[in-house]
Length: 103
Image (cartoon, rainbow, N blue to C red; front, side, top):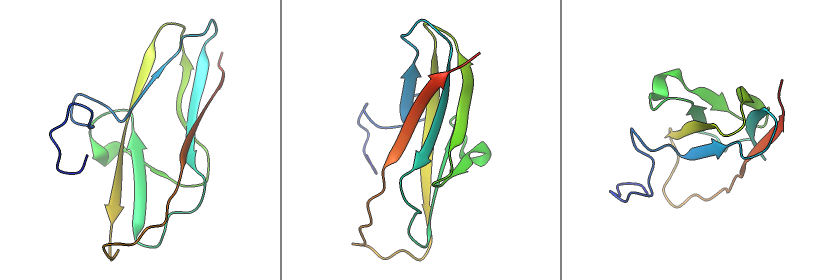
């Protein structure tokens, strides 16, 4: 979606993730990467479309939200900063998310 105007891309009103609780108990939502980001790459995510308040994402689990009630949703915007990373470099990482029963 880089440079795209597609409706499938993240923008100020459409988040990267939309986590909807379709179950019957409140849920906690957490995310993390499966491996350390390459040198020069910093990934961050936040619950608003403002990257200034986003949290850096690494292999440590980050709690996105707690107690997402049944039938509601939480949005998550994500960004990556690239400093001194050469074009054509590929080092794939998986962003995983997990839900556990909330309170």
